[in-house]
Length: 217
Image (cartoon, rainbow, N blue to C red):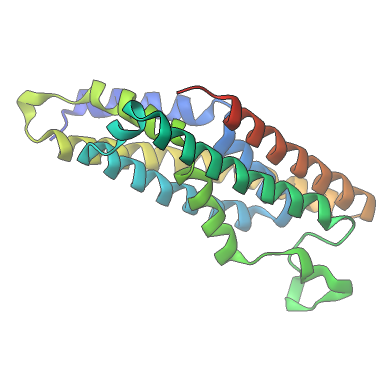
């Protein structure tokens, strides 16, 4: 088990890391700016599910493969970049179609056409996180530093630290989603705003894809 002092220090560090601008919180901000705060929160839940995968990988030692195998790292990086490029293509293609979920469920002027659905947003969050090898390597480097061998099972401590990191992520990213939801209400008020936010989203996804491609192991 973790000592209260270590758990508190780790949680504080996790909050700071979650606040720092990065691909995941930018991704949440983009999705919530397009589709509203609820969409950003669902995307956050997908990202948190991806963090469960990385926590398990570190606890089982699987993450060592990505650190030691350039091929595994390269394959996962390419898959992640391709998915981000696909999201960029969807955003650029959206054009002036209303991005928000129509109130009352009515398809006013095709408003629901570009909303992928909460299930799709949840899956986007998972894929965005799981296909980013940097997250796995970060967990591999970060979580073990807070483990205390004298306090019992290291895998169990890794799982507990991962849970604390996920909690910190949820707190910060839900706040980001609320901010993005305010942007959504503003930009979706006009067709020009809709075009602008879709173009910006496309550029964000494109930039994230390029950043992932050029990252080194």
